[in-house]
Amino acid sequence: MKKFAADESRGALVPAAAAQHLVESVTERSQHRSAPVVCVDSSLRRFLDNRLLVVGLMLLTGPLGLPALWLNRRFSAPSKIFGTIGFMLLTIVLPIAMIWYWCHHLLQPLVDAFVIAM
Image (cartoon, rainbow, N blue to C red; front, side, top):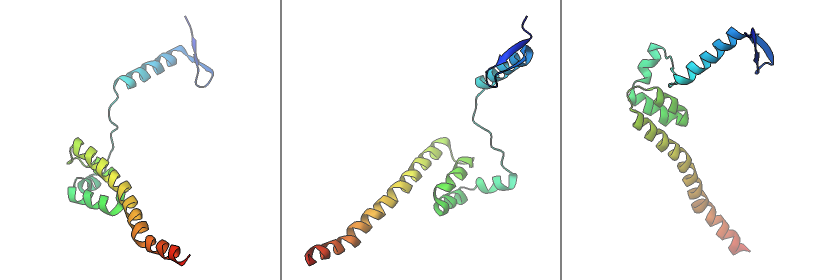
């Protein structure tokens, strides 16, 4: 019977019972995977469950408000997914559209005037 087993992560010998316990705990954890549980204080929970406050937080802080959306228990999973995708697209598309508009309408007359002057 082996008294020690090799611990490959540290290159050391550990008691066989400890090695067996480690294998069992890792196997048990991998079988019972679930979503991580986030503990939120009850006073913070009251604010996070307010839909209007979460939407306002997202509009005021941008993508930093997305965790509040996911911590809100009143939004369903599909609405959280669609809200996240829509908000990220808005966050990406809106600045590109504004830059494009600015370059076309404000800089184009300057470029045209420069070409005429040459």
